[in-house]
Length: 538
Image (cartoon, rainbow, N blue to C red; front, side, top):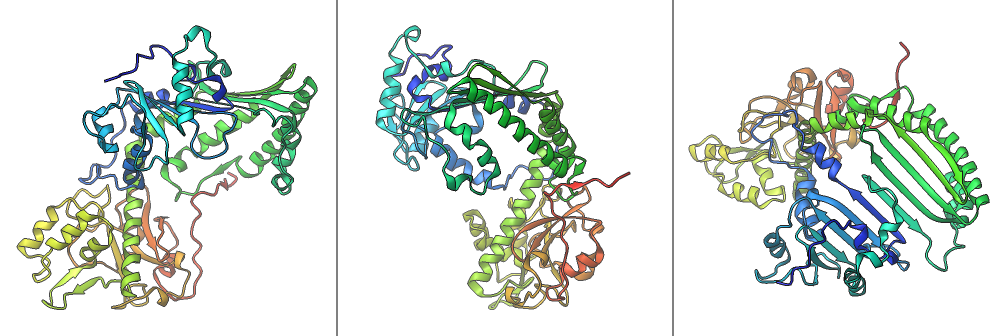
């Protein structure tokens, strides 16, 4: 195997030719890995808590095929582009992993034979888009947008480190979590923002004059040894006068940001239906932003204008708190995604049959009943659930010996992460006169109220097996405080426009009743989970 020589202490930027530094950036993920490696508070302990139903889990294989390596294990990522770069994949992408790359898994993902040499250039497949890649060390891979860029990178590696000019000259401080630099390519020194871009954008209009005189731009973010955050934005202009003009524009822009903060963010809080991680940490986020605005200063040195700001360790401590509670945050996102998948399955069923499934489905041949949840196994878009459906004996009662054995299958889709019974369902239809799915063959067209304000599924803690053909009646669903499951005074609701909505348990009883009815003509003022609201005066 023609393995490359060790890159030793060579940084990613040092391995990239200077001509690829017209638009270059690097993310240092070591800091995040250090935080993520810390001991976390236990989240929910339900039997399905490790299933991880969120969309990220389904995309992980695709992401690995595109980038060749599991990005979540990357230590540093650098992207670099030459003067001719436009849009799309970067000219060069270099990924450094925390540990040696699993060569066997890499070959498997690319469909290579076991004796294939991944230290030689190969085309990424099946989603590479013509990009080329190769390992350059046991824990480092380089991806090029075409053969010319790969050749330029490889030829550069042959030059003595002491005599070559690399992209490292663009950056001055090796301590960073994110850094980015851009300079104008030859022939575009006089380029400026188009009239169309600035016509209706006050910020673009403010910055347009600077675009003509800005030669280079560099941004860097880092945490200090004391865990305070430091940000620096440095612009190099065509003249000292242009740099002074930039500092004046900065002060004008700063005044706009200060006013925006005062009007829309200062003394605000998020509604309790926001994601718990956002709701609980919003005051810290506002405080950090306030520090960054208050501490921001601009200085001019010759043809350079430098904007610097910082905040104390509050951001670090807030991130630490969030990461320590990551199991809980992830579990809540999973629950919402599970409900979203059930709503999508109901939508597919409706598209095929022109109506929703009944809560209790009567088998045409045997006359035995089964739950709509069993029927949904066919519509979840997952082969393992389809196979489980085929094992269900529709010619026997739902609680026959054979069908009860299916309860032991790992069916997480119907359960909340907070549900401790591995057999229990957590999501139920709401039935009763006037509800959306009360009729035997209810349709979406029968819902006359706003679809986003009409509930069809709710989360509840009822200790009911998921195969049992039982749901909630209107009276049972009306008492929000007794529905349970999620804790933190919140419940999950699936609406007729197939969205997962979080409601507080102190939601107005009148509004909740209106939400459960499909055609009462009443408007339901749902809480807006992401809009900051001013705190009431004490």
